[in-house]
Length: 100
Image 1 (tube, rainbow, N blue to C red):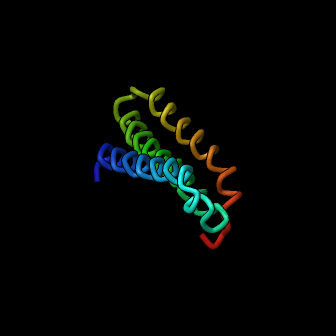
Image 2 (cartoon, rainbow, N blue to C red):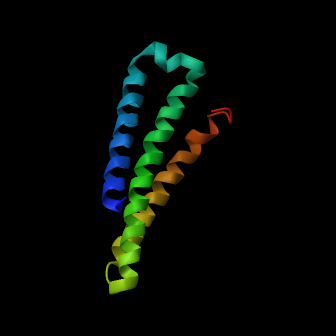
């Protein structure tokens, strides 16, 4: 599958989890389900799929850099965005038990 399509799909999945997380914050039944761990899983997945989207773009751009010697800054920017999103996940992951 092409990186652009995979990236767009990952971003749409991220939007789905972001919307689910936002709605779960309003609904007290979902918010308190499994002591709030389920909401943490939704929050984690919103970041994870967004990071995956940027990683796909970064890999594609870096491959193009090797062929054309252009676009290294853009590739690095995508890698940095990926890292920033994954770093944001650390605090969320610590609240989710391994059984999830």
